[in-house]
Image (cartoon, rainbow, N blue to C red; front, side, top):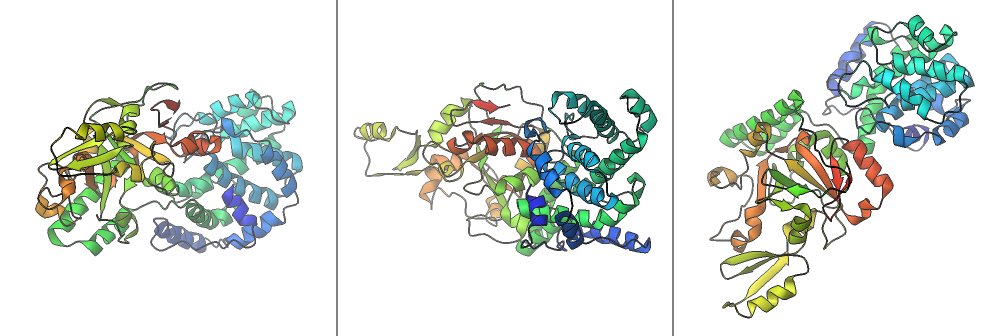
Length: 504
């Protein structure tokens, strides 16, 4: 609950929404509308004061300590992060409306459990009903009367055409006034967090309480600061093109612009991979339709990838890094059908070059290679750790803990891979503008096996192409880290360095 803690922490400094952020134009538009309506919006400092002085804040802590996180829907959009923001708005409204301690308990439970019946992140008017049916399976410290009111609120929150009297009759609730209060607080708090969606403007007709109007602008600012806390600012096409124009001109600019357009068209299409069929304990098999990518030591990059996919840092920030390539994302392509276990053993070894030959010596096999070379006519050989070891989880290094497996078989993925600047036949007159590639005549790496494994795709690849995630030993044995990983990537399998599925 980092955002809630930040609100209570007197030393934490909240930031105004950056003009560069995708939220900013919507923030200005909605601010003007509310001003024209005569609404005096709360500021974050007002919210902080309300939460700090709330007379039931100790009771809130006690209730939250009993929340079963395992039953919460695993999703970045509708999971624990969303629930936390809904909880914050619910607590503020509860304070403003001066509800009772008994009703507060229902509000907290509703905030945390209202989406447990979800099966996906799409529009689903009936997930509230499914969520309500699951409440009987949770150990809640509620009377039957209060539990039924909670079910009414959770059931109603996703139904745009709910009939309160019919719902109360269905769940055996006699006190319609209490039920309406909990329903209104939950629905309004849920609506406020729509600022996280692609079109974040809050529609006033969805709101039930006049007090909620004063919280709309705070919702924008809290979501922006949540993204800063998580380190995951969602990219937008205008910024990406602006950064492109900063680096490139003329023909190259057109190529990159077109690639950016493709990326955002795929984002807008909501393309999804076919659901994988792996079960826990299965062995992962790679084939030629797979790419791999590692994020190195930066665990914070996980949040960025969960929002945007695998995109060049230059393209996302407009800041040119110290790496050899600009505006491209690096991947390793799989050149044959092979088990992930064997693949990891191979790249955890060393790239060896001698004369005009090269090979990849698997992990633990260097001594055998040395013996073999006794019978090979050569002047010298050289070995270095594979490039994968530097970024992917491996048997040879414990620092890197996260790697991604992408399925590139779709026409959507292939449309981006057309601009792999290291692909055979790609115009080297174009690729040179993005960095120095492997040149057989001038660079010894040109004959190294790594050159045949590397792909450099202009801009990058969408998150929707990520099929699975391979984790290092530290994360494999860290229950909390795995839990957070599945919240960010609920549709992906997670496997270990043995190539075995540990989370479906």
